Amino acid sequence: MPHLIVEHSSNVAAHHDIDALLDVLLESTLAQGVAPVPGIRIRAVNHERTRIADGSNENYAFIAITARLGPGRDAATKMSLIETTLDAAQAHIASEGGPLIIAWSFEVQEIDAAFRINRNEIAAHMNKTDASSGR
Image (tube, rainbow, N blue to C red; front, side):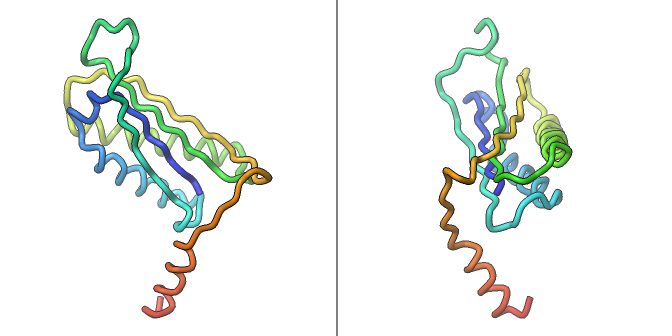
């Protein structure tokens, strides 16, 4: 874990490269070492129908990032994930330029382990691949 879910208004996708944003989020998450690599999942959800602020400006936009984490990380680790990852995302979008005025948010949700089943075949595959390549 974590799972990062990036929700955004459709005008963000019209002005910015969402795949590049997901790459930035992946790089930031990996660099922080807060999770085993096979557990990381990052996805985007484009919201076509939105109303932002008073609805008066087509350049109003939102990007809301939710990180779903397994239990056990302390508050400092969670805040570091929020701040570092949000900073990286904002810097990336700013580097692309564009007319949007973006409302940003980042929230961490801790998953209750008692009510979660995780069957991850990726970890075994990565371990097998690493062993066969000598890593």
